[in-house]
Amino acid sequence: MGVVVVIGSTGTGKSTLCNVLAGKAQDDPLFPVSEGVTACTFNTTSKTIKCDYKEITMVDTPGFDDPSGNDTAHIRNMVTVLKTIGHVDILMIVLNGQTPRLDRSNIAMLLVFKAMFGDQFLRNTVLEFTRWGYDDKSVKRRERSKVSEQHWLQQINTRLEDLKLKPADSKSVPGVFIDALHDTDNEHEARMFRNERDKLLVHLEEAVSLKCTDFHAVPVEIDRIKAQVEELERQIELEKEQARLAEERAREEKERRRIEEEARRVAEEQAHQARVRAGQAEAARIRAQQQAEAQRIAAEQRAAAARVAEAARRQQVQLAHEQALRDAIPQYGPWEQRQYINTGTWFHNEKMNWGFAIKWKRKRWGWHVTPFHSCSGEEVQADSPLSPAQIIAEARAHIALVNNVGLDQIREDVLFPTRGVGGINPVNCRWRVVWDQYVLTYYFRAKNR
Image 1: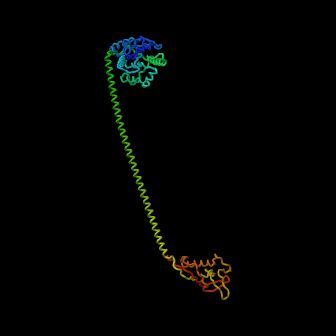
Image 2: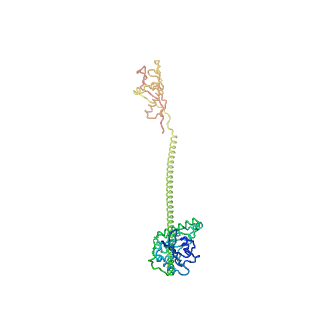
Image 3: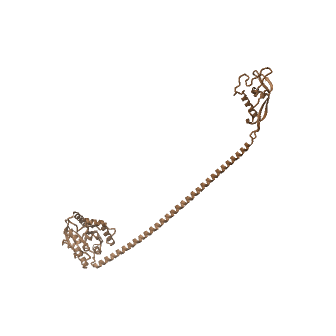
């Protein structure tokens, strides 16, 4: 049969919880209920009840903050009852769910159980939060306050760690939220009550019993225990203060580092900005230098172009001056009449066609040679070598060649004589004018420049 020891401060609803778990009314005399915060349970009461068809032994204990000053007697009585039972399965710490906290009486009781069962007593401990209503009003109030079952379980376990009653690496003390004051006619509240009660029964089934025959020496001087609690709380407050100071120093150190980091960052940013400005200044200097160089090159190019233009202008002026000088001096001198005398065989053989340009008549025998006809009697064409124009042009070119002058220095009107020195002999045709000396008259002009 499972044994559940109910402990807690006066007025938290221990006896009411025991009655409801037994299936009785909240104020049933099975476990007498106190009025308000006045203690009603003065002795440890042990009774067997049926909880959901399971028989368990409920041990209701008085609170350790009895105003009558009988806490030492209560401890002795509780020890006697537990030794009579022989074992304990669950130590259920009852806390007021509206203001759950471990006060000095709860801490003193925990120290007593630690002295009785050793450090492992928390393995059989379950936290019970009474007055944890599941009606809509209570649920909404907790939602507004942002509190939940998990929140308070975490808070109480942290408090146990601070009191050195629970190792930090040990399993958390579980909890149930059985509302002994629930409305039995409300299906939701009744269902939530059954769910939380069943959780307690599961813990009871899984618990390993703590033997009460081998108790360690239990301190019964409650004043000494309370003194220990006060000393423990003082140490906790001192540790909290030290932790607060350490946290404050850590915050100050963090703030100092943040300020230093910010100062370093600002310095780096300023240095970066300075480097950027220096880079911009250097880039501007280089651009200015490049612009100045470009302007210098452009100026040199303009100066070179100006010099070239000036040289060209001067050359043009010089050429114009020279041309003016040349224009002031006549290119040619006046025309001078000259004679070109051809003699001998060369003239006879090479220039015999010139004879056809001679206007000559044979009056003595009453016949004449018609000029500008070949010896065959055919009419000479204008472009034929025997035409007057062609003969005159050839004579003009020959005169210029012989005198080594330009053709423009020999006037075009070369005059052929009416006769030469010699006679008329037949050669390969009827008659041929053959001169031993043939004189051409032409006009020549000298070049002045």
